[in-house]
Image 1 (cartoon, rainbow, N blue to C red):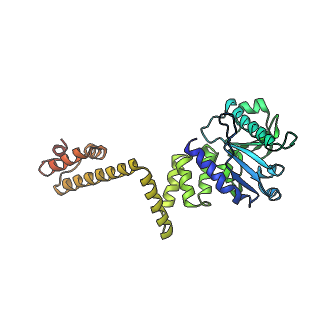
Image 2: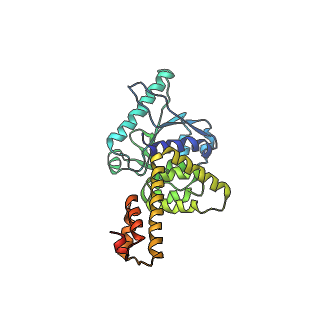
Image 3: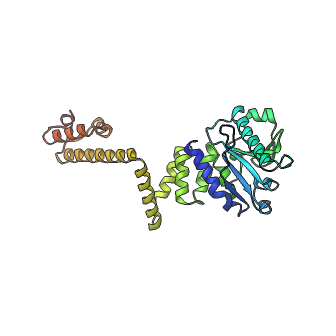
Length: 297
């Protein structure tokens, strides 16, 4: 399982109980004996009465004790194989519950599959029926198989766990909207793991970079320290880039002090040079050269 999937599961785990006012809780599902068959998560229904007042799909959970959840984020496969495997995991959990309870247990374990959209093949083969914005009952299981099309859901706080499955422009809209409603640490994880557009990612990063709040500044500093500690390669690249910037600036200062003008192509050569030894050699040559071109030989 990749980092985006872990982020989506963590969002469900952290958000579900809060957004449903305690009506539903998330827990990691038990492993089912078929070598290894394990869904992404389970929604355990604790206070079904509260769900009637929440946006769909939450009210559809009132009649169940638990729901198997499968998360398909932007870029994940939504072909028939992926869906059949999700249904297999639902069925495996159904068998497990029958074995736990009794052969006569009449209960049903439904599957909720959250994905950016409803694939065309599923519309043709299963004829899903829309019962709320972004929510479809998929045949032949009907209400026991609900497809949540995140791109079609409204932007509501109670739906954030499902909305992380958005893609494309809807994901950009969600990212801009949710950035004002969740803690900085969560938003930074979203920017790291979800494939939104570069423009939106940079817009939100710049928004967080501009603050007069010392507490937020301290948290940002701590987050940066943790990221650098966890990624020594990134830290070394930043150090190396800092040395290159310093060497370029020193070279330009010498050339300016000696009144050796830089042509545009020479300026481009300096900026593009990523070899510290070359920049230092040019710096030494600039101390005695009669022109910028001679310094950059």
